[in-house]
Each structure stands twice: as structure tokens, then as C-alpha cells.
Image (cartoon, rainbow, N blue to C red):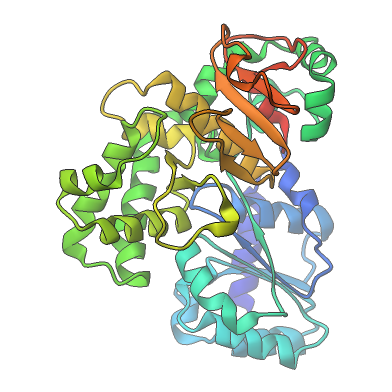
Length: 401
């Protein structure tokens, strides 16, 4: 146990505290069992360590941070570790990379039921494995899904300025005042294009020269290791899944032809639909439908986008189509802020948000002709820095979380 505390101290000594993401304040830390999940690289480990360093004194042995992917857990179980910790007076146990430990959900269930005064926080990067195991912890575990950085957070990191998140309703009602307040502090358009390319994963600020290769490693690990292990995909088909991603990265923002995509990569239509579902579970792509209430697991999506614009720039063999970049950013920021995003269809606005708003995404010259009859219709326009009437800068939707 002392070895775990030594590593705990080492981790805390190196964690930066100059910038804490707003996600910290969305979590009810009083819950007895919390799971923070999210794709690799979004900053889960840093967030947990910041929470400990902020709220506990140096050397406090009532709290312990450990990682389930270390050698310690090759000879020790989670249950034994929790038992020894509690007997030493431990009250707060943080376990990182929980998905790396076989049978994690069953042991967590046992720990939760045995030690009524122990608070447990776990994190996992394998969304597929976390989804597999959470059934054992129903009614016990509170889940939070951590996204990558919003454009707002990227600006905070880049400029050192403090920008507060806004609500969608407030942005739509008061776009002009909101944009003017931001512009008094900086010029958002100066930073926006760089964010679209390299601003989503926080490790950009650790080493910018290796950013693209690290994102590629995340994609390859997800496909080569997690999909084959957690979704029983034949390793021989991983190249076809990567070819599928290449096709998606080159799609223009129109409706999807699954039959054509399937022919191009040489797999059956139903297999393509299954792979798309798996890739969405792993937060590599986003499937969009015109009506989420009548959607089945293997239903053809009405639109397919990559999960975030950084993935689009890295996977595209050529410069990504501008309209696709805009829509990818918009959907990512809205969904990451907790909004329901549905495809609007070809004859209405691009997207329906929370079954309430119709929003068309386009360039600075985009007009209202396509949404002229929409009661709650708005335009998210690129390359403008001020809001006017119902035309709102695209970058402003990056301030929702």
C-alpha cells in the first residue's frame, strides 16, 4: 500500500493547476460511485488529479489515486486494495484506467456494497469496455462523459483569459451582446481555424509537434485493439474500417449512400451499419438521424460526420471540404454541451436542436431562404465575428461548455 501512496504523491507533484476545465464543476463529487468516461486524450487523468490536489492537503492519506494499468494490479486485486485502504482510514479512492482491469465492474460492485463510507471515482478511456461493464453497476454508478476541449476552453488555454460558458438559449437571444463581450477581450477568428485543426485534445499544449501522430495512435488503438476485443471484429477487417473512415472524411455534407460506401470497401451493407455503430460508440464518428425516437441500432443514418474537426483534418487525404468542417464543429460542440442534435433534412435547416431550434450552418453569405418559414430558425455563419438578428458566428457555439 505504501508503494501506491508513493506513486500517488509523484502524480500530484506533477499535475498542473493553472487551468482547470469547467467539466470539474459539472460532477456531483458527493456521489458514492462515479465513473468518468471519455475518449483517450481528453484529460480525464489530469482532471482527477486536479480534483485531489485542490481539495486535499499534501500527504493526506484519506485519499488515494492509483491506475489500474500498473504492475501493482497484476498481483493485487481491486477488492483487496480497497479493503486495506479502508482499514487504514481511507475514505476517497480514485482508480484511473479502470477498463484495463479484468472483471472491474464485478469487483466495484462488491466494494460498493461492502464499504458504505468509501467514495469511489473511476475513469476509463475504452468507451466500449465501460459500456460492457456498466450493467453490473446499474443503480449504483453515476456516469459522466468527458468531451475534448471546447473552443472556449482552447481560448482560455491559448490566451490566458477567462471566458465563462453560456447557455444556448442565451446565445440565441443575445448573440450580439455576447459576441461583443468576447471581442472586447480577444479576436476569436484569429484562433478559430487553428482550433478546428489541433485544439480538441488538451495534449496539444504538451507537445504540438507530435499532436497529429498522437491522434492517429488513438484512432489506430481504438480500431486495432478495442473494436477487435470488445466488439468481436475480425482483425482482418480493421483495414476496411480504416478505409471506411477515409471515405467518411471525404464526404460532402449531403445524405449518405450506404450501399455505395459498402461496395467501395468490399463489405456487406449490414456490416457497414454495424461498424458505423461501433465507431460512434468509440467516439470516432457521429451518426445523425432525422428522428431519434424511431431509430434502431442498425438503421441507416441520414448523415455521418467524424466526431470532431481535428479527426477530420487528420484523416482527410486532402484539405477537408469547408462545409463538412463547419458542420462537424457545430455538432460536436452542441452534443458535447448536452444538446440533442438531429439532422434537419434536405428541405429544412441543417440541424434540429432539442426538438426546438432549426439551425442552418454555412459561410458568411448564407441567407435565410432555406429556413424562412422556421419559427425558431437561426444561421450559424463562419467568417463573421458579430451576431446580427438571427445570424450568429459559428465560433460562438464553441462557448456552450
